[in-house]
Image 1: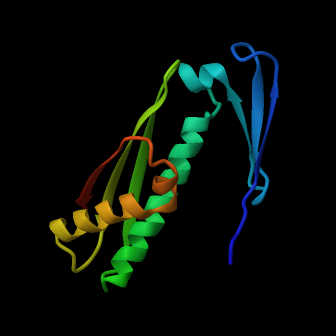
Image 2: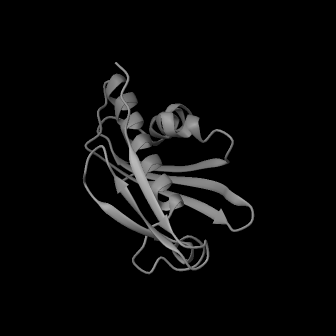
Length: 141
């Protein structure tokens, strides 16, 4: 069964001096202020599209890796994933780096890295971002 999730953004003013708010409408868990400086300079308590993409990618990748490991008979106790999305003003998103450390009983480092590479290639967010360079560092805790 397909699902649709919704977020809303309201922007006021010009790009460099304006600001906005992103709301996670489907879940209702919050509103997050955004601005150009938070995107291209310092966050200063605001988020950016790239940070939201990083959150989506880290969570999707973790779910995919958990699913793959459990399917192989070695469910993880814990996966700690960080996604770093690099944004270059004037160019756009230039790359994404995923870093994952896993606590996975019964798995050696090589099998964990292979499962992480598979999750990187096959999680829906990675597939949606297929035109972007995505790199990975995976290790066991």
